[in-house]
Length: 120
Image 1: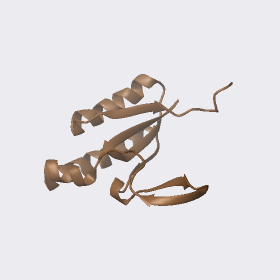
Image 2 (image 1 turned 90 degrees about the vertical axis):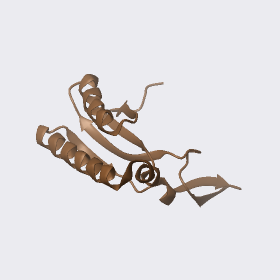
Image 3 (image 1 turned 180 degrees about the vertical axis):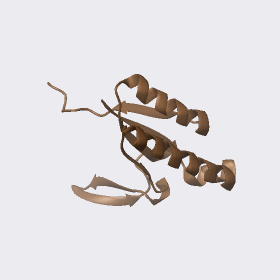
């Protein structure tokens, strides 16, 4: 089963709150996690994303798609990175996420990647 493990936040706020040394440790932690998941064959994909301040949101305005600055969510935090893992169980996906939470001390979202659209 595939799961997406998502981390939310703000790179700018994280740097201000935790400092450069912690951010460098976090990057190393994430690189080690990626290597471990590749070695186990569980990593499908994983990426860090540019800070939400660099995001664009496309909305319909007067019937025309218009791009504006900023993330969709009205929040200081947005999606900053993710992993898609292919694991034997939800418990394993939660185990991976728990390791991330133990380091970053912030919530991590785990959501199953659907194999097909829901039936109606």
